[in-house]
Length: 182
Image (tube, rainbow, N blue to C red; front, top):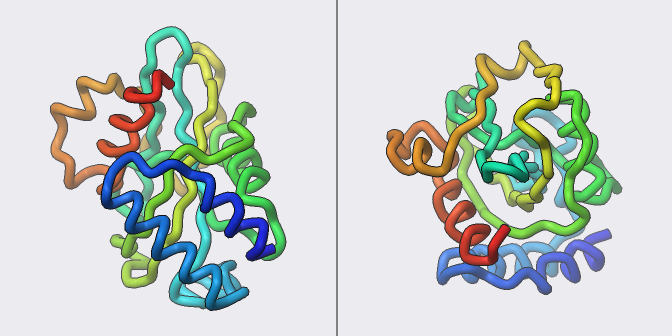
């Protein structure tokens, strides 16, 4: 599976120097281990694979984020890739489990390597970011145990908000997808 992950990561076109560094770091990590899935919560192994899925309204470009109780941040929905699971399948599964909707893309558009914060702080998530087309009017079934709130954000609202309340790479993700016309 790490060979397939290596192929998936190697074709990602970095948006900036930081994403290029994250890609190089991830490729080196994948070449050095086959232990890439979280096996014991919260941090075994201390670096593991995550799939984020960013719901975007096709009419407005607004983004759906969740106020994650554990991280204490507004984040895209998502979660840890299960052993042997394809990261795209994780994105589909997490979108269905956490919001009750379908629609994650088949290929990631962004890659980050991030030290976690919040209740389970201190390990590293290697995150593949996927897009999902979800209309603002679609009914949601949010996981209230995991999320304090769920809301749609305009890109202007995100830009005007305190960046410390979001995933540290969200602004770069939005800039990359805007530059690519997504």
